[in-house]
Image (cartoon, rainbow, N blue to C red):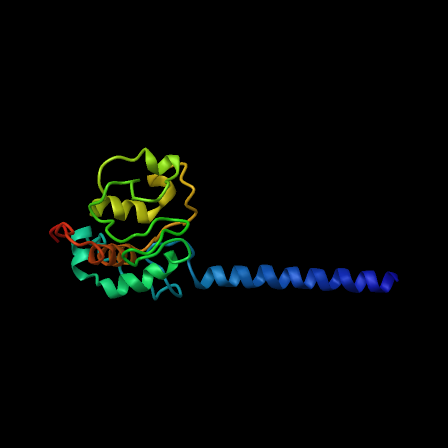
Length: 172
């Protein structure tokens, strides 16, 4: 019995030494958290200055409704995108761009959405799709959001294609 305990303890110590050793060796190879280091030390790319972030207008100009339809598949468990189709857990999203926030005929919104005012602008949709719970605090909607600006722009382009008279995209 004592022999089994000693062997188990020795095995545990060896495993810990291996784990710590691999961790230390890995830290020597890759600088974790360094902004310009993406590989082994010495092979990091030079800093080329500030990264240009595309404007919403530029992203929308490059977006396609087809790409947006693919990204919007994440929404299909709660929403529909077909004109005249009945609402699901969430409202039918046709005719969303430029529509009044929190008001779709035949759909009862949560209090968080019902108190929103104004119309759905492209900027509002982008902000909403980034993190719905931040845009409408207290919403029952559990969707975490779309972190990639390109994906949000694609979904917005898709929603605009489902609107009879959408406003023009903002200038790039």
